[in-house]
Length: 309
Image (cartoon, rainbow, N blue to C red; front, side, top):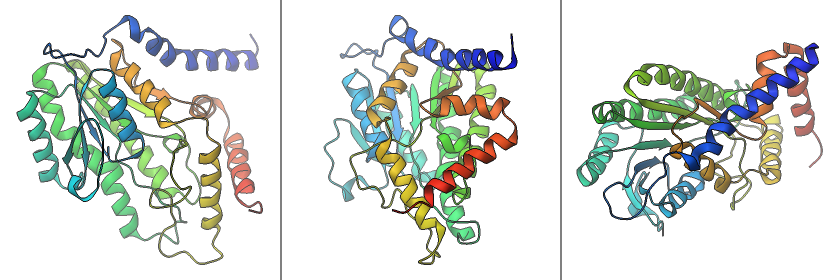
């Protein structure tokens, strides 16, 4: 077998592993509905919009009992078909109150899906340490806090599933997105270590790796913005435009990702990582390709961002 053939074979194996697990989900544990006392209790952080809200709706339709979280449910009108509870992931007391409320109502928590996420674009010179710290507080330390508080509950139950949302940024360090991608790298490392820590207790940890999802919202805004200290001629503005174009052209939607998460929750054997779309070949490229290939990929991204609007 030639080197090229080995790489193609490796890619085929890599792409089939998580798909095989997920494809078998319908033959494994189903998320039951009804009031028979066997409902799966799922807590979704960051469920006020985007993927978190869509996931909550999907799991509710599939028969799960879902609790979503947002900073202040009273401040935003929502018609979600699941209970919305207040939680600020950067406040350990707030996290504890929310988890305690679910336990008081249901007696257990079978799965937690961490969808909280903050994102901004800016060079290492433009971004302030305070901005980076704020992003890490949500994307890394907030997720850690939720995991820390739910882990003893799941250990006492003798089972449970924690799903943390990474992204393509957890695989590839992107210029002008150093804060975001480094936070996703940290989340991946934390989640993988947690996976090994909890495996003996029959608690699963899964890292979802979707790419940018096409959503029904403006291309840029609070979910995609520059840092404060950005001049009019900064390349960061072009990167925002490039990310907005990529998002608008994406074939991946929150509904597709939500269905994949449901399949993972329903499967008996859960994979550590579930790469989706372009994250799948990138996983193999990062593992086997020389740095020069990564350099060309980044150069292509920069060239695309630098094109005329």
